[in-house]
Length: 123
Image (cartoon, rainbow, N blue to C red; front, side, top):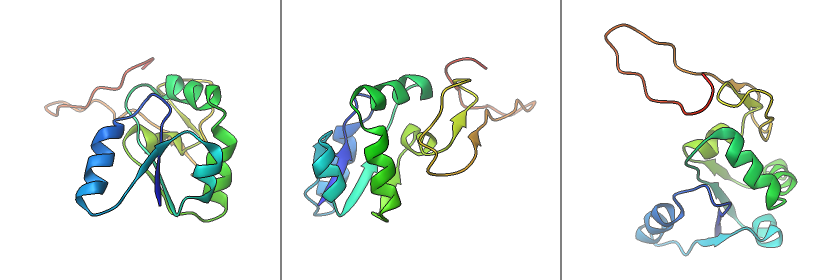
């Protein structure tokens, strides 16, 4: 079973529909037991790093996600979900990420003539 983590910060239905198209039967959940016993886990995300980490903490999912990753469950972070796997982000100074991947998410530096994607929050 593939579990999609629901923490009110993701494009859950898009991920669910993509998996269903591939013949999977995903489960959208924030239930810690379901997440811990899933065959695979996906952490989608849209929004700001700090707000998303607050939501994960609010739903008591931070340690669950760390345990799921530590036991070797295949784990996919999509968009903001991938960023949350790192130690921190320039977007939200002082907010710790999940720390599953080492490093900090950095803003793409401005470059004359190139359009740089927007990053919300404090530059």
